[in-house]
Amino acid sequence: MPLLATLAGLILMASLQSQPSVAYGTYLGGRHKDGATALAVDAAGNAWVVGNTPSPDFPVTKRAFKTQTSVNNDDSVGFATKLSPAGDRFVYSTFIGGSFRSAANSIAVDASGRVVVVGSTCSSDFPVTVNALQREPGGGKGLEPCDGYVVKLNPSDSKAEYATYLGGSEADNLTAVAEAPNGGTVAVGWTRSTNLLATKPHGATDGLVLLLDDKGELRWVRRFGGSGEDWFSAVAVGPDGTVWAAGISDSENLPCQGPMLERPFGFVVAFHHEQEPACVGFAGQPAAISVDRNGHVYLAGSAQSGGRTTGFVLRLTGRRIDWYRSVGGSDETRISGISAGLPGSLFVCGFSYSRDFPVTAGAMARYPGRGSDMMLLRLSAANGRVLYGTFLGGNAGPEISPINNTAVAVQADADGNVWVAGSAIGRPKWITENAAQVQPRGNTDVFVLKLEFHK
Image (cartoon, rainbow, N blue to C red; front, side, top):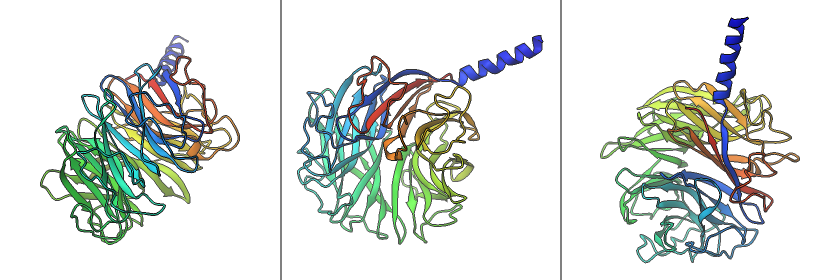
């Protein structure tokens, strides 16, 4: 009996250590359908979230870069919001866009707390600054993204340090951004313009990667692609300064090595100083990338497996794939975010319909309800094994589209703090009493959730 009791105690202790505690959970939104796209956390623990809103009453602060929006419920504009370390107030919040469609796709924060936001805009009156790299729109038109943009914000000032268009005569989009080691910014996306920044096109759509310095001046730009459609969806910078850009391709002649079994396929490219870019292909469509302090590269996204969509995670060392794991269940699962910020662990998030999703002891919610639900997984960085799995319990009503109930981004630090952002409908149990926004205000609201895990 003593031995059995000891074993039971050890099992219980391990289970309790795998369970996170809720530090805070808050809504963020106005009276219409608001959605998050990305998340970043500064050195002081302030969480920045970006996304898109059609809500004229979206909560903005007085000294914002742009305090009002003129778009209506059939359109949307980007936003960027800074949440206090305790999650109890919006320190800074602003619209980003002009009088027509704009989207905020990604955000990066530097050591001083300033942030860079990238996205796309079809506005001819986007609020560029006098020092803009490109002060006029390039001319891309249609329902697709028209021009990319880059905005650098200092939350202590209502003015942007710089804000610029980035586009040519056809559609262009900036999809992801990361802080460069020298204090600059690396942005990636795609372009269909033949006249963008004096670059030479390879195919109908090319991936685009560019480096801006701290003042917004262009230091380096490159197109990457084959004869078909290629675009970048995620970027990260390694400890040695290597820029890792991940994307999707349907080109027959993309210069990659690896298991590109069918098109479209995923790929990741290493850009390092003056060396030729090194490309690795794999099955699936990457949505997120993270690099740990040892230089291992982790990619996550969605792939087709057995006639269904499932999540995947892989680890790359140099140009070698160390392991590749499918993540999900018997129904649809998609991964949108990944973070390798806690040594030895990976955190991935997204949504799933699967009632046999790999939840573990101590899960916050074991089932997805009547439709999809946002989910969070903690994986072993060594082999991708599930250490903790949970739904986040946002689905409180009838069957709901994933766009209304999903986790899109996750950020972990070395102390076991994990921030998750996404969109929620219903009333998750983890919204805290002292939250910056305690009640939902629209059809769908942005959420930010901070969890504390044992290391």
